[in-house]
Image (tube, rainbow, N blue to C red; front, side, top):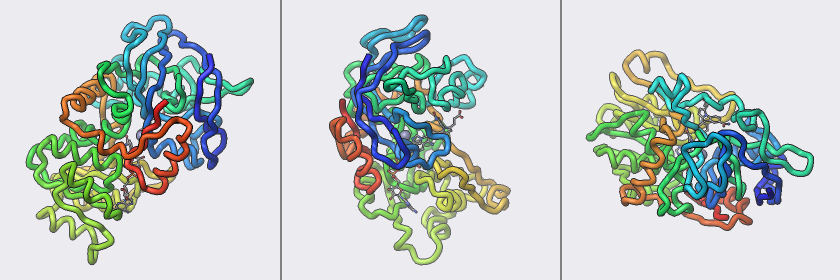
Length: 369
Ligand code: NAD
Ligand code: 022
Ligand code: ZN
């Protein structure tokens, strides 16, 4: 069949809006009509050429929502008409990693996903004679896409696609970092570095679990108002702090934070986030993705004295299990997604969504087909 898609043809160039070919679902695969997709930083990172593993041409996008059109052989958990959210972290429930219960990093299709192909080693996308690669196993910048069954969460049918697509990455990552990775308890004092599409979801997760103090740190003063609406209790603009930021934050949190979150992708800030965690028990979670080849550093003393440095992928969420629950939270009014979606664009304007993100004007842009 044919599908409209935004194709990443060349690093550093805008996406090319084309009609390309899509093969039907093979065994264990599902054809999905994408109704809406968010634009996230890792799409831009790959498009820019910054990711050494980025493949071209490819169909980017990993934050979508849509409807099952057709299922391949031996697909048992989904049927035509089901509403779904694609998962860049699948959940097979059978691999060593899933069975361990210690991680969400399912390895069932990991190798082929990283090579831009389906588990059988081939791509469903093509353009004339050329192969077009998949991306993160999801490729949501196409009106129709094929995914493995284990990379789809089935969600309720009354949930609006143009809102819940954000649960496919940013919402789940922020909430999950708080609940699954850090396991923050009520009364905790916390610092969140970076108040964008991830940090604001960390803040609403902290409010949900009853954190007492939620300090937000951002160099963009325009982020203060939105963060307060989501539960931030104190705002710190590093550019307005005299002297070092770390002692300032240790003082503000009365000895250091119980939990800190880095939601920027800046290795210098990752160090500050660790070092303002409380001596003896503070935990610091890295969420931001740094450029390839970058390194973090601190003095071993920081860890010897009881701080824990940790990281999270997709908020530690097991997608097929956790994503439908988060959709329920949204439908029950327990979480706010609407305020974070600052721009909704028709598919033809997808490149404008990238520009809004590059200029720091949007929290999230959502593209609707
Ligand atoms: P964003 O651009 O919306 O937000 C980043 C915020 O950080 C902005 O508000 C910006 O003003 C602020 N900032 C930049 N430099 C700063 C500095 N030096 N000090 C303080 N604040 C600063 O980005 P986002 O969508 O929230 O994503 C944040 C990071 O999370 C990205 O690196 C993204 O790739 C990563 N991410 C990771 C996962 C995961 O599973 N680990 C999932 C999704 C996103
Ligand atoms: C999503 N991310 C950033 C912004 N939006 C993001 C990027 C990478 C990861 C998670 C979220 C990530 C963390 C750890 C891994 N990845 C490796 C997982 C593993 O090796 O098992 C990651 C993931 C997918 C891909 C690359 C890296 C991919 O499909 N290309 C989950
Ligand atoms: Zn993302």
